[in-house]
Amino acid sequence: MRKLLQYHRPQSMYDSEVHHYISEVLSCGENFGDDPDRLWTGFKTKFHNWITESELNSAQGLDAFADRDMIVGVTQFIDDIYQTRENVKVLPNEYKYHQRLYGNKNTLQNYYELKPGDNLIISLPFPANGDIHPDTDKILNWCVERGVDVHVDACWWGCSRDLEFNFDHPAVKSIGFSLSKALGLGANRIGIRYCRNRWNGPISLHNDFNMCNQALVWLGTKFIDRFGSDFWWNKYGNTYYKICKEFDLTPTKAIHVAYDNNRICGVRPLLRKYYEG
Image (cartoon, rainbow, N blue to C red):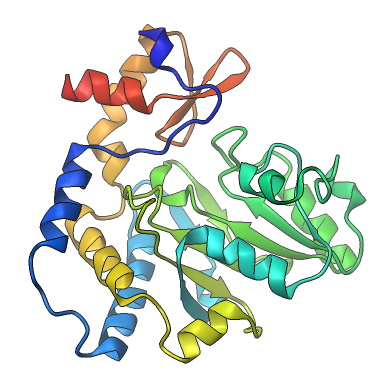
């Protein structure tokens, strides 16, 4: 059974319940495009409540980020930063997308290499440990002292537990949340970008001119209504800890990964095997 552990590319959670619901929603014949403004507004409200009403996590300080735009997942949030900001940097062991785009060209060895005018993208939770980066407070304080803007990739927030974080740190300028990993919508990506101050770019233009994908917004709304804030942990939490004990893994705060000794690994196949049979 250990062969089911994923070391190269851990997969986020997805299961038959989510799969069947996607099919059900897409075949229901509901007309969702008659009032796009109502669709946008409703989704933003429900999405914000979905974050703040979690019983397993505490996202504080989001009221400081009043400018909120729909995004096609956190990847679009990242793309927009690369297109509109200069000197974009990441830390070692970040989301592999950065490395696939630029190799190691913009990867720093340590946060104290950040300089005035840089823009740092940092994942929270961090993919290398399934938790908040251990140096987060030091990183944010370093950045605010040196005029470095920080952009938080929070795509793992909704599939994690026991997270408590105040996003209203003066260094943080934007945050990207998504339902991709949180509710199994990786192939139908939708989320919200929270900005402290609005800046011009593809995301802003898409939202200003009603160019957002209505089908994705509608699907995201349906999934929030159906599954709520803490779906994966409520469903698989007991199974996750059982697997970690049986296979001598160290749990993380993200439902789809654990530590095998000092190596992060994906547990989705094992979770589904034990839960679904």
